[in-house]
Image 1 (cartoon, rainbow, N blue to C red):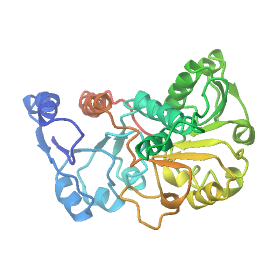
Image 2: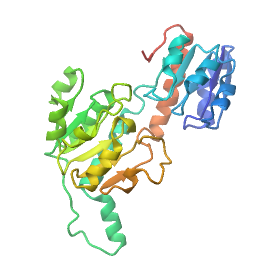
Image 3: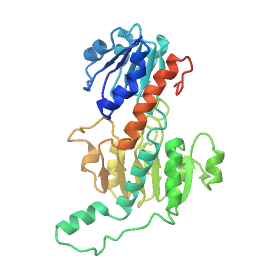
Image 4: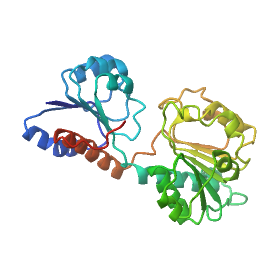
Length: 317
């Protein structure tokens, strides 16, 4: 079979060679492209004649899938697959396997870091000391004793909840289904309205799909308290980000820590959140760490080996 990795995975070529070695030994053709592209025509060229394609988080649209007539399996080095032409994959019976689990710890740790940053005024403190100021008025608040609301208690959401619990927070959650593990940890399930209105910190951890696009509307944002810290390391389009910026500027929301937007960075200069007050913005980096990139690369290759062995894993419906 022809198997192509269409973009870098954030690891060294030595790691790629090690992970792909058995593919070549087993007689498969393996092609590795060490540059990213979002150009559909270039993606079509790279996918030509491929039985298996491996990608990360750059778009792999419907038209590219349609052009890859031999494609049988798509191994996605990412948890979400909303950047993939899913409908065309279904039409062509192309199996999609993701890299679920590789960034649970990585994302959860950034969420915690953002919460600490927001509550303890870390960015403001840095600016203050550089300007010759003192600690007067910027000590901030602790996580311990506060109520943290998790919206979407999947694997990343649960890991995030565990870390907040370790800080001494009370954790409540909204999720479509309930987990016995979560209940055993003392996490209390509530309605979405209750989670939004009762939480001092709200962490959004939902996947992006047709049901969640625009999920956190202007009306739902209005349910949060004026001093709530809102954190989104999930997907940008789940939130009405213009309404979020407006709530911040009008002091109807305390703080927002945002890693994801309505588009991938670089962000247009007129994007509302860039100019909203009381924000910490990061360039969609929550999933990236040295450790997570190694885990991701291994999972995406393991998916291919499992498929070739006739026992596919991490299959997305």
